Image (cartoon, rainbow, N blue to C red; front, side):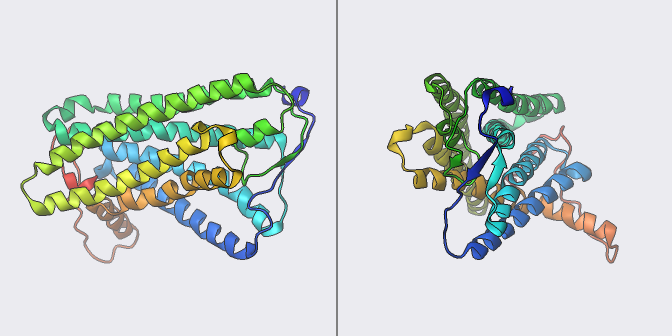
Length: 331
């Protein structure tokens, strides 16, 4: 189908243009990529192999970390290769594939962030119902629906995209294959698919964002009732960091895809997409997990198994899914 509707075999990604200090830019993105993949892979591995982290919160964090590692691995290698070698060519089928995977993972992340905020809402605001609400079966269903929704909705857009004829020019003023730059190389009528994309963006950004925001309004209200000032400070510290990341992710996402194309300059669109493609995957391991005592204990426990030099105290963990107790300093 791609061959029948395509007349350009390859696409040139202009990236960041002929900027100076290409090597410095390459090194900066290389460090970001390594830290992102290592941090998210570490969190995913801890959640999978340490039974003390078999809780709903860490189950969703494991899903998010796996998603971020896949997301970065689909984006950075091609960009790093272009910065290092100057080869900005990518096959058109590869370009469509990159766009579909990135877009599907972004939509999945929107759903996962919403599910994670709901999990924290139940844990903080309705702790007595936590064990019966966030069961193992429920958590698996929520995660599965998030992944299916993300990939299914963009499969519809991919099918519509494949009906277009792409005749050039074969250059995209972007650093990866994004949605609107792809439409620019089409010589077909794109009014229908643009309208569908706006509806999809509204469905998969506004409702999850509002649900996430509502959950944290209730969470903050509950935190204010904590009598201990130390407990409130710790809870607000991590909660505010999470809200910053969520705000950056959703804000840049809405700017990139919901603002009309003619009202946004290309550099602004590049910058907004850079925010949600780079910052959240890089910061999530530190904000959500690596700062938590349970994760640090699990990490020391695994290191102790590999290098048994001294006895490690790993007793302060979350209990399994049936635990109804809540530690507000862990989110």
